[in-house]
Image 1 (cartoon, protein in one colour):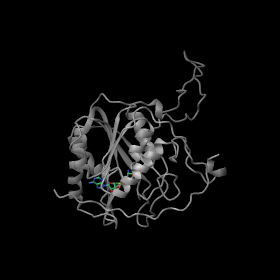
Image 2 (tube, protein in one colour):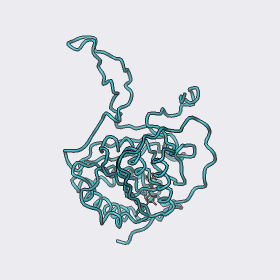
Image 3 (spheres, helix red, strand yellow):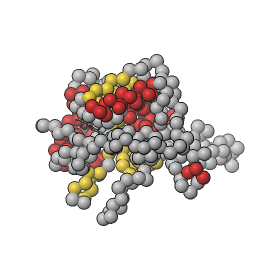
Image 4 (cartoon, helix red, strand yellow):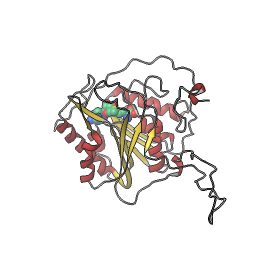
Length: 308
Ligand SMILES: C[S@@+](CC[C@H](N)C(=O)[O-])C[C@H]1O[C@@H](n2cnc3c(N)ncnc32)[C@H](O)[C@@H]1O
């Protein structure tokens, strides 16, 4: 099948951000500094790579929305194209590995087609097992007048098998009642919650990367780094390979490198790939500004939005 390359609008550079304390501490890079990023079609990038070589494949493909920056195809052709890419990803996935496909809606004539529902059968036919359908909730986006405004997208987390890497501790979040204790029974007086915090659950609230976000580049739809970090930290170990077949400005690779993993990625737009290299360079020398994973979402009702 002839592939179509989607085109993205290049947004003008944003003005100076306001001065909230958003400079994140970036951990020093560990021993392995490897990064493989190319300006290349993803099928061409993947074909020479070894089967079973990727511990985590995490991506957000184009949604075939037919806006001015995309060339739109029929939903059927889009699904065929996705099937080819997913098939190569499954080949690359390690036996204990995870594949995370982050998608929103395809829209046609005012009707929405949630892409996780549309694409699920492809993953299922490959024998992948769905572990979570994570809802990513955010507050900003288009305001709809003839249906409710879309304020979530989903991440389908699949594993290749039943033996898979999953580390909860690095992604625990503060417990609601941290000092809570059993008040009766054999454990009376002991902590009833994990002192390291609680499971973050399958509804994730992270601001999407819009105009004022500290990580904003020219890319119109980049991942927040903190979202990918949650997946990197829980689904891989230091030194593992993390791959994004639609890497845009390289957020997944940055999240991998920031946490001592090896980052692989490709994108067809040279300008995005150049920015991805700049971001990798910045994360390596500790100058990349990121929104930290545990920073609360800005709340206008609180002094300083709850950030002090
Ligand atoms: C939704 S964006 C991903 C953004 C990315 N998550 C980030 O944080 O920057 C999808 C990207 O896929 C790229 N793309 C489209 N078709 C592609 C292909 N066949 N191979 C590689 N990249 C492609 C586009 O240029 C676009 O940057």
